[in-house]
Length: 485
Image (tube, rainbow, N blue to C red; front, side, top):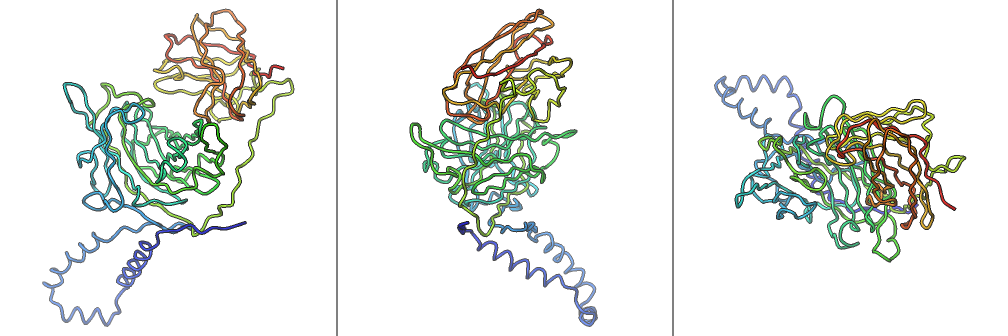
């Protein structure tokens, strides 16, 4: 296959190699004869006087950056100076509400971005302005200073805990207008954590028009990302991206697109075939995390980054093809939902077939028994999806009509919501969010919809049971999505 060399910034690497080689020579043990000469010619007082200098030299030595097999280090920042290195980073100030309905003003103040104990600290601060609560924070980027095409980004960070806090390490293209404004330009989110759910980290790519996204999640057990530093990385190659946390692969993507509305898609692997840069920020509030509340401790609202390192292979194969979509087959009786009769008591947390999910304060459990799915809620949470039962990979073809049907009842009369969504196509709805009431008696519910968007191999059936004024137990059986002839 055709190979193409990618231009790399190797001057820094060369200088580092010389420096480490010199340091290595200085660390060689002296011969015995030399030791004896020194001891005879230098007084004890002189040795004592020189000792602190040697210790100081060791303290000031540059930290050794790990080498990775098959990669060259093209740039890094260990944050060991006294101030932010502005040959690498720039501030990106913005007024409140700039994006995602976030509350913070991004400033150029060293109160919001500073170095401490070998780490960059991005701090969110709560103040008052015009008699109202006001928030400031920091956002830094390497745009037009350390841009690169393909590579492995590795960052170590510790996130703050608190409702409404939203730390992120992410990447955007140097020239956002090359393929068009977001999301057509593409976005790579190496790490995002919500301050009210600090046991879960997300790695995501955004692209396309309509907006498409693919997101992976990594959940810690017994600890959180706010307890200690963890290493987040992405390996970005022409036809694939792989996301890791602490060296564990948790998300792989190789199918994306971009297009201007009404036009053909740009050649794959657009939009991720242009130079990108790294940026880091700590947002306050917004459409995803929600706003801070009385529990949010802004004295501890600090996003700490220990290092950022970017590596690159000597060359990349750019002759890649977009993988063909794989559409899951219907069952023998034409059902697009697997295990829709709940005949198998499957694991509801393994990402296969049915999944039970909790978000934003939702608490509960789900289990399959005797052909019935039972959902037990303890806390309803703040969103309709705070308590959620889903099945993804539902294949839907443009121009075809479908019917969703299921039986449901509840321990007490209550409402719930169903829909068919598009998790990799901007969460648009193929079947709109539809609220209905379940009672103690079993009822059969039926909803028809037509697929008007382009083919999607990853439609998602949702049952949303959060934030509706009830935690009454719900029972579901005989779930079907079938094509209507």
